[in-house]
Amino acid sequence: MNEGYFDGSMPRPVLEYYLSHAASAQWISMSDTLDDDIRVILKTGLKFLGRAAGIWKGDMPEEAHFARVKEAADRIHAADPEVILQACIFEAIYREDVENVPVPAWVFEAFGLPAEERNFRYDACLFAPDAGTWDVMPDISQTETQLWFYYRGRRYIDAGYEAFHMGQIHLYTGHDRGYQAIGRVIGMLREYGKLHARRHKVLFDAHSHSLVVDGKSLLDYNAMPLTRFPILDRSGEKLVLVREGKSGGGVSPEGVYEKSLPFLYEYDNWGGRDKWAYENQSYEERAWNQWWGGDQISWFAAQPEEARNKFLDYTLKWTAVNNPDGFFLFPLLRGIGPGCVGDSCNYKMNNRSDACPNGFSQEDAAARLLHAGYDKYRAYGNPSMLEYGCHEADDPATGVRYPEKVVVYGSFQPYVGAVRDDSNSEITRMYYIGDGRYTFSFVMPYAGEYDFAVSTWGTLSACVSTSHLFPFSGTGNKGKLIIPQDNTVVRVRFDYMTCEITVDMID
Image 1: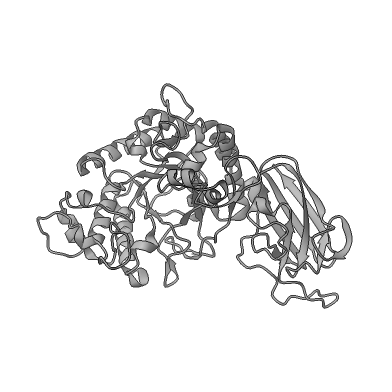
Image 2: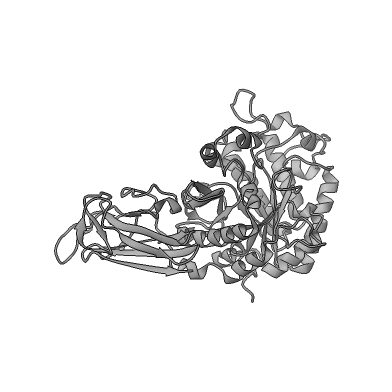
């Protein structure tokens, strides 16, 4: 039986198999290069295609839309039956999409309501005008919204889609006390999927770190866009990634308690490049404006090809090192907005060719990374526990109290998203691993010579380095950190009682 087999149930190792071979394939069901897209899917070994279908604001009639999404699903599954396709149900709806759709009798039946011959009612889906939300945001506590979400979900399941991205779920559940309404809809779609999905199971994620009710997670895994920190001392629009929380735990939909559910990072899109920022803001101001004055995928697409290749490599390593439960949704196909990068409105991983003239030529780099996987870097990664410090632990031989806070600091810190020489940084705080020992791992995106030291108790009054035999105070006396090449994974370990510091590196 292969790693990707499932039918009705999906144990965590199987889920992680798919998430470790995942890509964002936004609206691939509408792609005009689908044959070449499928070639790339097979070449790279992708098994999970996020955002493969859905609407933000529809551009075709409902029946034409579902005919297209089913045709694309059939073609992709003919090439690789193992692939999971994800559909989207977002935090925005539009009148022309909702009010032109008749409510099928099976929707009323599923909710125990008398059938009516009518279309969906847009106004009945929304928050009150004074709620302070977007004017196109649905309120899931409204029955009409639940009918709409359930309707679209069932139709995607019938078209061959086995996963759902539920968008910014914490926004449209603002009036849904205890997440009862969204829990009901997700539960109903799960039950329908047990009978009618291709492999009798459907998966759910959303932009959330945790969505747990009574100890049980409504989601199979959590998902969020990445977070960045700009770098100003290098030419170009350089940035590094920083951790923003981890995935919460709970009893998974499989009925298994997980301390941390799997987590999926992505390069998100929300509006392309901000032309006003480029025309009116200084270089420094724009650095702090989103991703250098744009959204994530448009920033990525605007970088030179070799820089994009390096950033893919960096992102996978960063994910493996910083989140033992994390995976990266590689960009296969993603909207970047008109005018962001040349004439293209979409980023496509495909190598540029006659079959895909607007390709960004990233497939070879992505294939190499996807086939190599995460395990090599996870071995050097930070521990899975969220807690830092040792919490009133003492050295058994001497009775000396181990410090709760130990920090690696130095000139390298800005390149991992911290402030230079910040001995009290939470970003470069070390994890306690027992017996007076601490560890911290990070990815250095740039080769070069840096300095570093370890501060105990988060203060410059008690520091240790590889170049100084005794504890010292201040920012001097730091040791050297020689980074041999870009995107080097670095692991620093520290023994408090002996002041020994060891550094390991892998590329």
